[in-house]
Length: 348
Image (cartoon, rainbow, N blue to C red; front, side):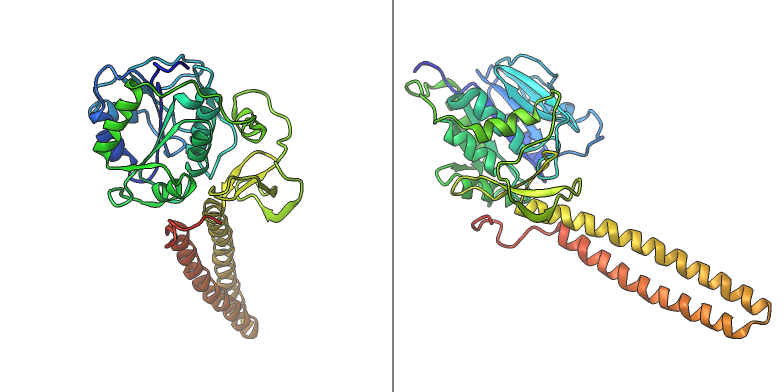
């Protein structure tokens, strides 16, 4: 990269509340922006194809889902499709069904990690509204590799978790409103980014993470640490290892499949698994109550009143246990949906 080049890769990540924020941000970008805009929004795995159309209504730049192997073209917006990680390899977009990161595919960290490795100083990372902390470690990687990190003002964001976590991981990130973000993105793309950046020392940890996400044949993922944490992966149940992290980054937990979590996203994944297990218990109790009631009716019909009473008591006991399980399901569901009150504090 020469001193006359601007930052021609813009990596935008968002989660909850992201559609409105993306529409406003893209709508404020100038036509002919001399950069490619790559977008990751946490979406349902089997969502429809409406997102590019929704964003296109507000954007002066053409918007489309990215295609695997597609070359970057300035003045275009490429969006991660549902259930695919959007990655950058050289100057080409790659799509991957690699392991979910922080419970998501596409994931914010995946795009930012790969952009940091592929484009270094050419990258402007933009972290928008969202809960929890996907994108924080990726933003730190972009900054280490010479890129710029911009964060939506948490006071403006519908959900402040992702912006606050990114600020914790990158203390010198610029905090701006959506209008300010669009202006800064355009300026970074057009103005010289400075003398050629020699880059940080080799980053084998980041290379390991990104290579595992690329859409190639995979063997066994080798976590960055060898001692298991005594935890299991909420996604696959495999042993969890604690990965390396920078000083301000959230702790990273990885399994041998390659699923990766921060502490907060893993809590959410565990809540989902606990809820699933409780639902299975609730189903078994419902069936047990129903069967006991039928056996009680049959016993009473044959004149076996003591047996009928015992079956009825067992059914009532199952019904009481079911009521307790249902209360627990509601409590776990509320916990999993709740953003931690200290979302802006030091990640664990």
